Image 1: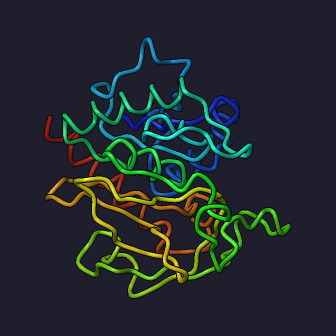
Image 2: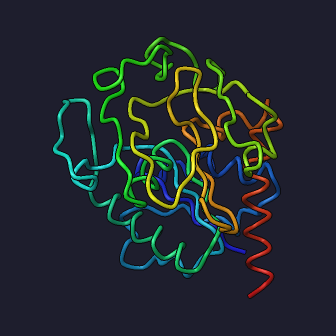
Length: 239
């Protein structure tokens, strides 16, 4: 089994110390089964080389990919990463490989399915909760607001019974949901917090919070990774 973890360049430099890497190790993935990849690897990395792909947090998605111009100075995109990850997403979908998205990951996947984003939540939507807790001096690991499961029959619904508390480290969010996706959780102030494939896809889950920062303290957050990895192993065994 091989899992690609798509990250930005700074995260890739952390190597095995990356929280995403460590979260996979926590649920039983061997170090040799994990590959941290980035836009710099675009010439040699293909979705077909892996049994599952984890799309992680980081830069904003270039608004041109969802038909808008950049409106705010705090929108920091990196087009090479966008192009790299959209290609990985397309390849993974073609093979029906397991996909997990985190923070930027849910936003990128939503755009890949034709959806749009709030470029800046405070400017575009006036949230009632603090969705970027590090601006308030809180640690990345601390849960700060509730998430309500809206589809109890979903994969997330099998992990989280009703609601849970999560950390929150984003200034953008899903606006119009892409065709082929369904919302499975929302924040207490109504923003999309999780999506999954609307059809019977083997595993496609994307969440707006950062479960990799909470795996040591939360069984449900570990289980998100465990379910993803289980599907990756099943796919690898079926080859």
